[in-house]
Length: 466
Image 1 (cartoon, rainbow, N blue to C red):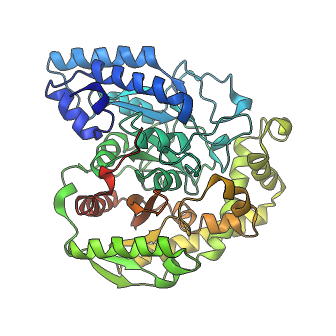
Image 2: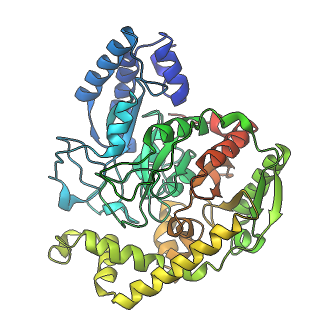
Image 3: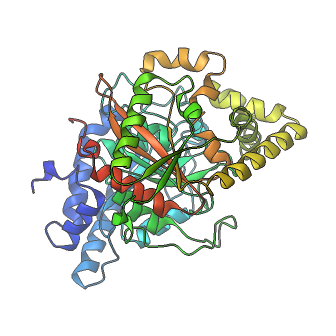
């Protein structure tokens, strides 16, 4: 296979070609580095390219394979990580010019686990300032590879762009209020937000300690399953990680959805929702019904207060995380992240307590809803991916933030696993998507459902023409 045909292979396909001797990790890594060199100047997903260390890692993976020491399906496959995940001796600035000289002296657990699974790390991917809602004014935003006039999604913008554009075979993102799901939607990739605590947060610069999730962003559901299998599990360095055994997500991927019950709240999924988004979700549900799932009408727990109080919890916890530099160096922050931190420092203890009580009540009610259904389905946003020219107006309107995160923030509050799936394209050629939500630690079921949907459709076979 010619080097210019390799970049849109799935992660699993790339791993099979390496293990089967069709291509070496060194060759594949060199091809990816050449593509990054060609496109990063126009798409801007990478903030740091680790060409030297990636080349050395690839050579070592090939040497291991030659002596019969393969590490599994990720062996030798080039991946990338969001630039808030620590790597020894590498700048980790979390999208913040205020941290542009910050070089970490340890590896995040997720980086260690990817490398232990045999992956090659190509580099660090751009994100919004502090993983909140907007890039710092001094940062060049990543560009949506489908159409540069449209929003690529935030905060894992570089992860979505690099994965969709074939500049890595999978990436890591984080999700606090939708930051895996928004760029997965905008860039047309699969985004998996695991159960809170399923993946270690050690060595990952926090936005909100009790809301932050880490998960894979890939071009196929199988690839997400493979990455989660490497990432998940307890970590002594993160006392909040869950001790539950990690299943073989790939082993059950083809079990299908026959007999599965998918819950929808018709008011929740249609309230103030664009007709294109609603139509895409309806079509996706028809596909899953055709694969053997049943659809049941349910009533979501009250969610407006949960959405409105997301900024209280996120703001208060972000203010704690930035206490060394905010407000002392407030002028060095961009207006959006600075605005969040100002909210955080101005909150009283009763504000946070009230938001926490609302969050806990919602989480308990949502857990009970899964006694009725296996998974829930919902849009990822109320509108299709917007034009960049419309973003200021969209975000400046009253209640705009709450409208943006209506379908994402509740499941960060609850810590529920979600999977975002491509499900079509707009008339303008931008990807459409939807999400499935599961009970805690039921990622395997979400992956099964996602795989069944993906196998019955063609959306993951389409890629940007770059």
